[in-house]
Image 1 (tube, rainbow, N blue to C red):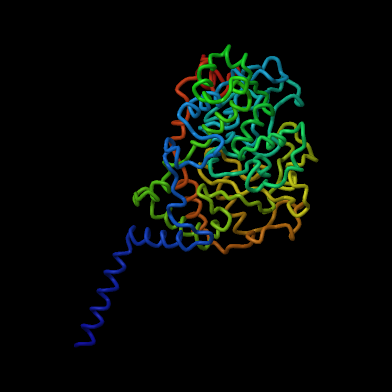
Image 2: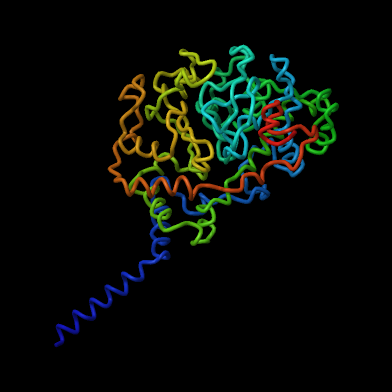
Length: 443
């Protein structure tokens, strides 16, 4: 009799504990996984501030965030009226920074290859921009690798796939790699990567900020407000425009995504499946070995053997373009060949092309690729591959769970809040060409 009662008691305890395996225990397990994962610095490390909490947003000490500067940068980022340094007459004032980095695409391009001057159209959610075949192919401003995201860029000290922009952190002591007369020479101004890239990108992408263009287009008083302490001889320049652009970019945070809400204490923000996917991310799947920064990026470079651009799918493809060498295109070191900077992971499904060459078209494909760990680029030798690129042993269910977490729990659905209400020119934005006007309903 006592044995029977004992068995019944133990059974009832087991049933009770099984029924108690609810969301709270999953949440506890996930918190434990994050706190004990490789490179862990605790939950708060991954929690992003509000976009107006300037004191909490990483920033260059030489370019402190202010409301006036961010407001100016927001307008300039979307303003095509400064697109006057191009080489295609009919495309003047039709493109902006946001042509390749707009909110509908998670501040990526929404397509495999970003197109500035020489592009037309916006399409649905920005995936429809295309080359204008009425102009010479060699004149078009296109990216030689997939356009990196500007989202969460505040957490990057050095930017681009090869990390070439930024005078500090990874690039400290590399002054001999900053040749005069090149965009990289902008590093000599001494700013961090976000600011350096913003300044260099103005000339590279054929924009023009002079006292004349700033004044005639109504932006002079905005520069005066944002840079009141800067002498007037330096105030109306590419440098100050770049600092305003960078200030705005640093506020582009995916802080309304379910994972961010969960980090702030809203346990219902993520589904049970997404929490299981997150546990895999910070555990068995080893994603956090490389994606360990606050934005799930990292200031590291790894070779994982992804392909370069397909020459049949892009414009102005150059077989010998140094961009395919990754970090080595900047450092010139053989040991850095084919190593690319670890990208951030928020809002990936807004722009369905992945890898520096856009060779994957879904998050699941990338996860499957990393799970199998078979390099697709034959030019990358095995001894160059990252030590983290090895088979993970995930099954189909685990791949589904991990995909759900990355695609949906890291997805901020309201990035349009970062768009300006209006720009001073009154032009259609982010593009102002005839087809974009039709696509965006500006006519």
